[in-house]
Length: 347
Image (cartoon, rainbow, N blue to C red; front, side, top):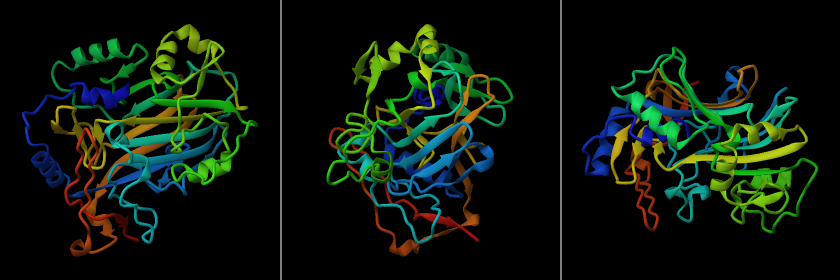
């Protein structure tokens, strides 16, 4: 559940905004002095700029605690790119076929946990902050409500280093698991989504769906489960999490995403078309996801969304030449109005 759902669940006061596009323009104006940058790594000391929305260049990490790949996708991304000659695709394949109704951004991890004697109860995933948060009145009521919705949620919002985390196996939207020495046959042609990872890992059938996205493929009571809700419900109980052993000989693939949080424009998009500025995310406060052991001794990986001053960047093409990007999905319209061009940092 984590903080993304707290944003969308009313932790901030609802604004009476009936025109989402006018609100979006206001949000873009408020954030005109910053550009989004996405970095990832095995810990805070090894963060590096990641190629957002590129399926052929996932970030490979290898540490004493975790070995695998990180892929980050952002709907309509126009932030910093690692290579000035490597602009983001106009529309990422991941968000095609109406999937942008489910996800405005995605953090996908494929790899192996290398720490010994781990259980599903030991691995936590969620948001960590560097300093105290300016919580609104009655925030405690909403924290209580969210804990009722996600019984595994661990909130520490009032400390000097706040956090909102849940056990990894009970919070991600999609999860696949298989033995590391188990391989399948690649389809021909190989899907564009996860193209590099599918070629490198060659997962067994069922771990990824036909489009290339991570599938729900996880054993529960000796039967393969294909329902995310059932797996998350199963791991609500601490006893079940402690019984599940996480071994280095096992591969895990999981996808965490949100239909509410628009990190590209630093806002929250509600199902009723209300658009609100995102709290706890500004030039001084990044939005960081970390996967750690519950005791904090080991960090497996970090993904950080951060805003940097625009004067430290330069656009990849002139403002006059940039095209207008529009995205429309049947059943739910998402339109990005005349975004700024992608940027790269000044040397």
